[in-house]
Amino acid sequence: SYVKQEFKKTNYFQYRRDYNVGEIYLLKNEKDKAIEYFKRLVTDYYDPQLEVYEKKALKILEKTNEKYRYLYEIKYQNNFRLIEKLDEQDLLDLSNYFYEKKEFDKTVEILDKLGNYNEQKINQKIIYLQSLLKLDKNKRVIELTKDSQVGESNFLFIRAVAYEQNKDYSRAIYNYEKIQDIKLKDRANFRVGRIYYKLEEYTKVKEILEKINQKNEGIDSL
Image (cartoon, rainbow, N blue to C red; front, side, top):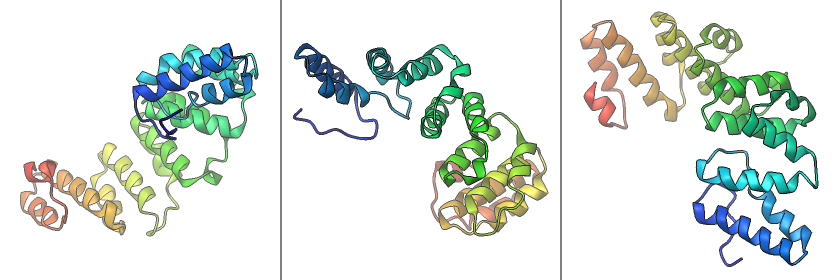
């Protein structure tokens, strides 16, 4: 127990440590302490180094709560019929897990099951829309972001990407140019520059790229 517990993915050592400590507590017949350590291995993020330990932990934990059997079958056996049996927080955690694993169809299926995604946290709405983008469901993204306001830069950016993927470049540029958030403005300008490059309007590309504050290799290359 010397090394503190991190709540985000850290390293292979931590996974081994938590599993082994849980095993030791089981041997000492201190089941509550064992469960505490095994639960640490059941996470809402994906890490291939964690997988072998999470599988073992879920198999042990399912003896205490059937929920862990459902999680095992959904994560590792693709039994999505069981999502009916989980509560909202478990489903949100699963959606984040599959999003990080780049299994976007499963992310969308879980969030669709929850329904009323507009009422969820902004981060979950972004994950939902980004997953739709990855699945090339651009029309659906455009429909769901139609009420986005100027101050909602994240949603305007996603909306613009959907138009860009649909090759509707004029609407893409219009939405990129509405973005005010300084963190996204450089990314938006870069994408506008790429569009003008595709359209062979090279003078316009140069004008747009000169507006970007934080230069990088991609910008220099373009």
